[in-house]
Image (cartoon, rainbow, N blue to C red; front, side, top):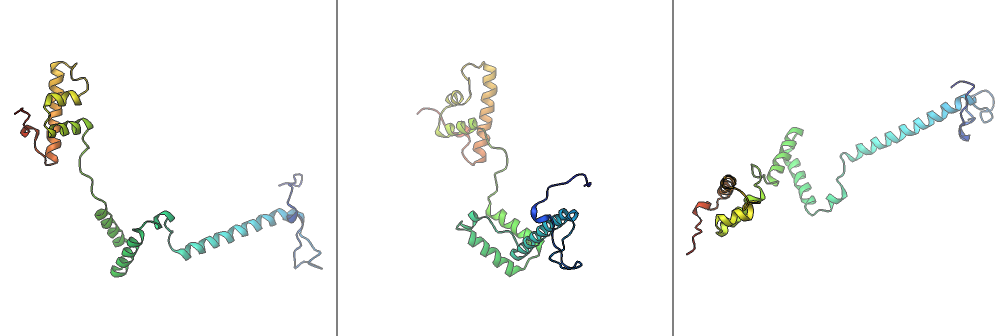
Length: 185
């Protein structure tokens, strides 16, 4: 900053007495040019002190504390005690501990069934067939616009629906729709 420009300084940074000068230290003051620099140094020292305190706090605690909501769960204590027992018993290194956590997760969370989920029309049609409804009722209930379709569209959509229902029931170990009798007795 040049001498022509002046910046308003806070009153505590205007003229600061510095000990160790010539004469009486209480009466001697630093030059006003250094007041801004002194204020900057003081704020940097304060910020460094705060950083050191936060580092000490992090070192002291070791790891992050879990959220307060998870501590209230009834299973939290059992899981942490179990993990502590395994850590004491096996004394795993970092890589082994991660493998153990992966195995625990795999055992805890059930696997999803492979393949894509069937659409709602297939599920509805399979339920109707298991109840014993004939295909003509299933088609009109499940396929939109079944009554207005021509015979080729009906043949295509009907075959597709029958194939999907058969696969759906077979994957679940239920009776094949071909074995379900729909004849009135």
